[in-house]
Length: 118
Image (cartoon, rainbow, N blue to C red):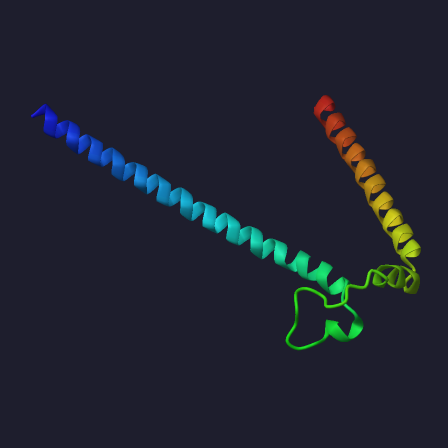
């Protein structure tokens, strides 16, 4: 009798191990699929930034540019006022940060005062 319990226990343990391995494999498949889905737009953006103008709108689209053009980056930087964009971002970020700090301090002092006075 103890022999049959041991054999059934080993079979059950093997089934559990197989189920755990299958679940882990399925998890890895979903993780890899998630990574591919999340990385594809970034890869497409880099690929498109290196394409010549006529190849950007070509049909069917290609993932790898036929003639990579790194000159697209200096062209983009010279055509748009990125310095002004950067300055605007600094102004907005600084204003929001200072405002949040100020109003947080005012709220803290108000609550502290109402707690102390009763």
